[in-house]
Structures are given as structure tokens and as C-alpha cells.
Length: 223
Image 1 (cartoon, rainbow, N blue to C red):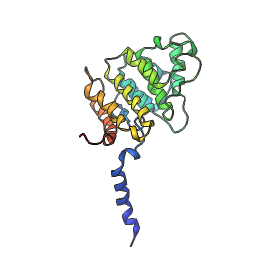
Image 2: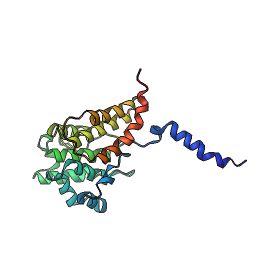
Image 3: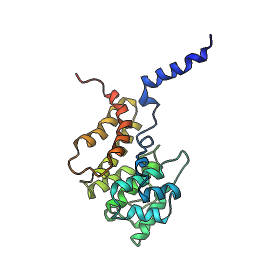
Image 4: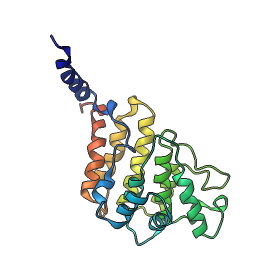
């Protein structure tokens, strides 16, 4: 008997039994930039990654927040160390005519705080509590504190609030399988309960939730 015939069936059973355990993480498995490839700024970032034009687009108040998030999502993460947030912070400091070490959270726009925080989360996906690095206030901020700043400046923006919840869910994910129900609850609560205009493409939200819903099984059955 050829045991190889049974390998695909066994593998399928394992994947079906524990999909969340085999998945990567909220930050790395939600590639919603794929549905923004028709947007010039996202397509440019796909070709060139980081340069001054991408930095300008990230800071541009005329670029909608969902497109801004899609640009960062397109730039993405790497298994190798990357310093994308540090590079963007240098640009932000120059635009404020100051040094990165002198930059304060209070002067960041919602655009800058969202892009910087999401980018830092992608850079530090294995250590989300890590700051950008340096002695200044913004340099000492971690991804979640930057997204807290973004939400405080744009509390009614669905894209900002959703990315904030996605980064929060990564913290929950990193705390271990016993808490993975919280991955689902954190993001789903925003998707279900947000009051106001939804300014992210429904297809992008679907991509996020297709992954996040894997963790609903960790919540058990309601009594």
C-alpha cells in the first residue's frame, strides 16, 4: 500500500481542525491592498516601495485614509529587519522643520500618525511594544500609541479605527492562544458597531474579516 495516497487527506484534516493555529497573524495575513491596485498611489508603492513620493502620499491630507492604509499594507512586512517607520519619521520631521528627536505626538496629523503607526507595526510585528528608537517623544512611541494618536485626531474615521483594531488584535494574538477569542472580538466589534460612514472598500473589509473570523472558533459556543 502506498502511504503517500493518504498524505493529502491527513494534511487536509489537520488544516480544517486548526485553521487559526496554522495562519500567520492579523498584521501579516490581511493583504487588503490587493483590492486597491487600481489606485495610482498604491500601484506606485507596489512598484517603488519607499521613496519621497510615497512619503508625500502618506502625509497628503487629500489622500483618503483607506488609501493611506492600503499604501502601508502594500509596502508590507518582511522576515528581515526593516526600518520603514524610521525612514518615514525622518520625512515627517523634515516636513515639520524639526528633528525626529524634537517631534511631539501632539503635532502629528492623523495622516502621519496612522501611516507611522501602521508602518511601525509592520516593522515590529514580532515585538509590537518596541518603539521606533531614539530619545524623542515620537521616537519612543510604539505602534499602538501612534494609532491611539491617530484615533484621537480622527475618531469618526472608519479606516483609522479599523487599523487601530487590527493592531490591537495583533497584541492579543501575541499574548497566546488562550486569548485568541479577543482577536476576533476586537476587530469584529468595530466592523459590526462602528457608527458613521464606512470609508474602506467592502472588499478590503472582507479580506480582513475572512482572516479574523478564523478566531471566532476560539470564543466557543454561546450558552
